[in-house]
Amino acid sequence: MSDIYDVIVVGGGPSGATAAAELARQGHAVALLDRAGRIKPCGGAIPPRLIEDYAIPDGLLVAKITSARMVSPKDRSVDIPIEGGFVGMVDRDVFDEWLRKRAAAAGAKRYTGSFERFERDDLGRPLVHYRPEGSARGGELKTIRARIVIGADGARSKVGRQTIDGAERTPCVFAYHEIIESPKPGTGKDFDGARCDVIYNGEYSPDFYSWVFPHGNCTSIGTGSANKGFSLRGSIEAFRKKNGMVDCKTIRKEGAPIPLKPLPRWDNGRDVLLAGDAAGVVAPASGEGIYYAMVGGSLAADSVNELLATGDARALKLARKRFMKSHGNVFRVLGMMQRYWYTTDNRRERFVAICKDVDVQKLTFDAYMTKRLVRAKPMAHMRIFFKNIAHLTGLIPA
Image 1 (spheres, helix red, strand yellow):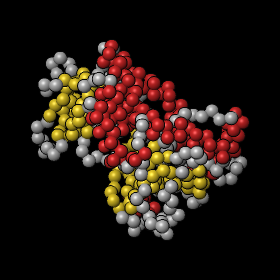
Image 2: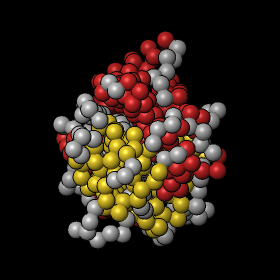
Image 3: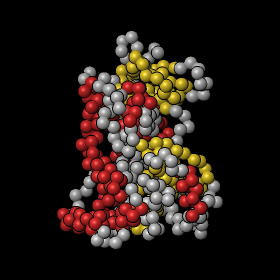
Image 4: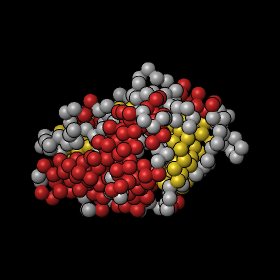
């Protein structure tokens, strides 16, 4: 309790580690609190924009994906080449720890333990009580104090639920995946170590999608659903049997909630700000989160830096305002796609059929690689519009 930090960052995933690193580089005293050994279930895909913006070394990439395959409920597939580039794949245990070490190298002090409780001292400054790694449940908690707290502790954030109205009402999809040894040549149904497979099939997910994401020597096979009665483990077991992966060694199994949309409020108007999954910044339809988490961490750092410089707590609102200005349209479009196309197998069949269109493929991957809604040629947009209408009305068969 002798030290008072400028900022405590709770959560050392991509968002928290990014915020901690950037604030430490700006000369602030930063504490980074994270649980040991926690690995978030994640496909691990990162676009070129992230690699460039955040100087990710090539050595962290365990695979470079050069194509994607969309698979319909009737096992019809559409292969989409990634022209002129690749999507990088990372292992979250290694990637996240590298980000935390980068934050420490910038000057952030690391603490290992689980966040338990937020309080204030006699002067109204935040106190973060945490349980050190290895301490017994019910044992004495340790305390860190600071001027500002960033909650980057994942979906259904404990920091958020204790400090920000409405944070407990985050709608989520629950994701589950199994990391297996990658199928050897000649085994596994049409497995390709340079291709990501995205499966739209109600048998494996009634309201989301399933995936096969190669990571070099290992592969992530996963699915997600907001349907609490749906067996995610049973889904992956059935998928592995059908696709010749049942005999591949299982390395580990992981599950966690994934938020469906950004929270309406990310700060308490005083001294707490949420970032990453805690703020709900996972892209609908795709479930992509690493890039948006790191952007959220950067924006949180900018807002907190401004608050520390000016003393004006209104600066905390800028993180959400700036994020939604840059990415809000993408989230709205993807949200509408998910709400419509993912609801029945008939619609999923039509959705995959739409993905055969070269205009749709180019617009989709240009947007993914650059993280913008790309302004393609006007005629391409017109063609996409009329083709979508034709699919929606059934004029084009699925």
